[in-house]
Image (cartoon, rainbow, N blue to C red):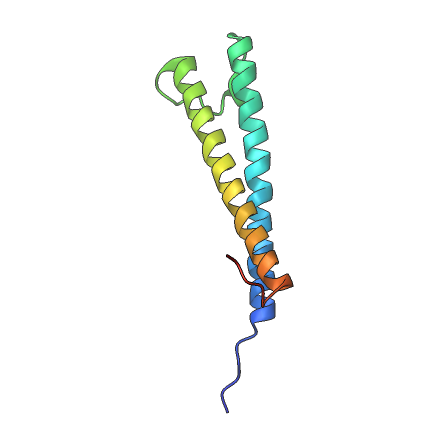
Length: 99
């Protein structure tokens, strides 16, 4: 007789992965947004210790890149959060009717 897949462990691993993606998205968003704000207020500051000095366009190009990074991190963290909440709702009430 074939064995049923262990969906409990697979769902737990998936929730853990989504939780990690959510946490990483929040941290990157916080760091990148803080750096963008600092770069806007203090034009002479070095953004993230010069990690993005290779970006063309000078300080404006670096700020745009950091803004895009913050936006992508925010969207991916939010996506992981909503997926995680939807999976938790399913697991807690498997026979619920959604209308």
